[in-house]
Image (cartoon, rainbow, N blue to C red):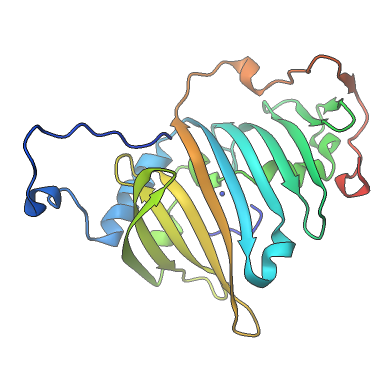
Length: 258
């Protein structure tokens, strides 16, 4: 699904037959039609009820400092519009233009919102999502919303062009690598990597052409992924770490060091 910069397993272990497969045999299951791959990915990913994953986000080229760095653990369930209905993320990050690494955790169960600032050992909780303040952008940045919506790749399927680039390994997962040019004017092009085993996305690279014609990218890499983990309602509620305090105030601005 086409989105702006901020809105983005296990390794394959296949026991083969005792005999050695010929090149013709090993290629029988390989897909070559990029639209077929995208349609399979659309069905497989759109069928998810929940997902648990680790993800990294990095910018390259001249926009690297505008993107920042994010390393996150994410748990999502359901969908609401173009976002998960429930989510919890734990994010270690460096904000754009900063060199300070920070950590926050937070999310929502759909009726209560919370964020934990680990530097001050303080949790901010309320029924008003505004309690998160600027932390909300950080908590949502690692969400790969394709894992939380019914038709995640309809924009890719309807794009101007879809090209199968070949095979790529993402954190040990063998993937089809596709290049997509979208219909939307001025939209970045994208490289998508879909697992050959389950057709779930493992990497997205948005490719931007800057006014000076230079190329820059935003790369979202899924380090591990569990589809439809077993969950209960407590999974999306605040779990206050020992020694932390809970307050009803709105969270301070992260850019102010809060």
